[in-house]
Image (cartoon, rainbow, N blue to C red; front, side, top):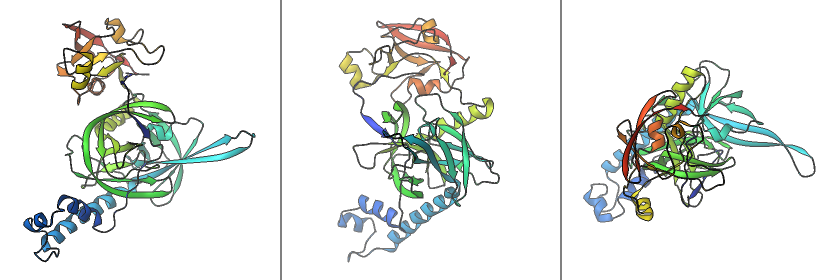
Length: 386
């Protein structure tokens, strides 16, 4: 694990069942258009209304085009979106045993029943999992793999079925701020395949999220204002071409319509690793670090404004460098600032963890770092993250 300690992190609730969304006719597109053109004079200037205030043919055309794109994308993806039901027996204080249920979402990536979802949706080893497909059929599900990386909330689930519809994977790297996206999922673990419409609010967000299994550090996330509710975790975030660009993962607990999705590129690397190895394999360096921003550099009086500084964790026993790890063997110590890996600079967008994900265990990398202001270079052979 590449642990990361953030000073005074803002906690977000990871939803063990996320996403909700309602699109009624063309109202989603109309609302977005209205928000951008509240001024009557501006609406008239843009040709959206006549002098008498009535809607023009141009606005009707825009509404119909957006509405058609949303409908088409939802129709394309929805058949491959599944609900994941979690069932476990729980004993109360009086010794009585009762059944407890939860829910999440996933989507089918192979015709023989391989499903991608969030790790936290299927993290309970004592639970039984059932997948309900969009046509109402239910199947017992087996968890095949979970991503060991603390920055990748991903899992692969399997059901025994054939001839299933599958999603098309797109590119989260190509997303633009303000671009329309659609989320589909099992809202409140009750309303299957609920649809919500929003935009890409930001990219490459980093946060510390809190859930039933503790805290997780997530990086490179897509921020969206598409409505996210309990039950939607693991569901697809799609573009208007009907391609999956992200996996809905977390939502802010103290805000309105601030949700986050794991970029699909990270999921694709996990899928490739599982296909090749039968499990998800990630590389391991062995440092606990803090990403350096301009604000952090100013507070700590650092000589650089980018990179990753090796730090000690907030809890007892959280060492800056894991004993016996590649970083330990290379001589890294608390206070070292890692600035480059194989010539690629570490930035606020391209974090240390994200750069490491492009390598495999056994790969040798060259790390440039600063120690007490002096530039150093060292070759490190990566291990496997357990």
